[in-house]
Amino acid sequence: MHIDVNGQPRELDETLADPAMPLLWVLRDLLGLTGTKYGCGIGACGACTVHVEGHAVRSCVAPLASLQGKRVRTIEALRHDDGLHPVQVAWIEHQVPQCGWCQSGVLMAAADLLARRPNPTDAEIDAALANLCRCGTTPRWRAAIRAAAERMPRRAPRLLG
Image 1 (cartoon, rainbow, N blue to C red):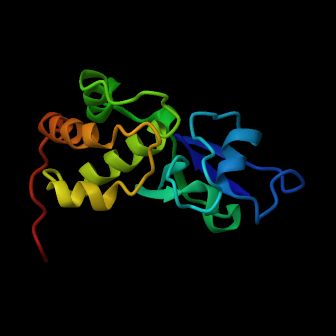
Image 2: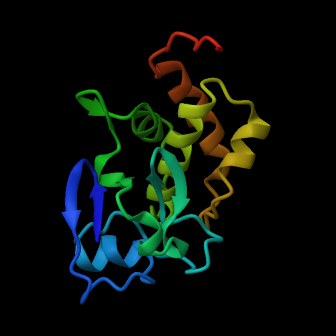
Image 3: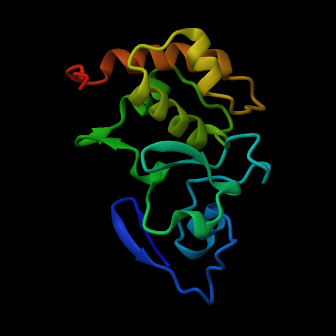
C-alpha cells in the first residue's frame, strides 16, 4: 500500500499494515510519528486529527484502505513557509495549551479551518473545532485563531468559471 505522509512517499508492508488498520496506528506504530494522539478511538474527541488531501480527518476512524495514494499531513509537518504555522505562533502567544494532549488535533483542525475560511466567526470556529479539551482551554482557541487569521498570507480570490 502506498500513501504520502508529510511529503514523503511511504510503501507500507501489507503484512504489517492491514487495510482495516486505522491511520492513527499506522502513523504512531509503523511510522513512528507520535505527535498525533489517541484520545477516544471513535472519532469523537479530535486528538487524532490530521489532514488528508488538505482536509481535517479523524485518523482513529480512517481505515488505511481508504487512503491508498492519498496525501497525509500530520502535526510534525504543520509548518508554514520556513517557520511555524501561524496557528502554532498564536497558540504560543496566547498560552493556549495546558496538558497538551488534545493540542496537535486542535492545531490541525484550526489550520484546516483557516485554509477554508480566512476570517472565521466565533460560530464557525466553534463548529470547525468540535475537539474535546479536558483542561478547558477552548475559550483561548478563539482568540488564538483570530490572531492566526491575521498572520495568514492573503490569497487572491478565485474567479468562478
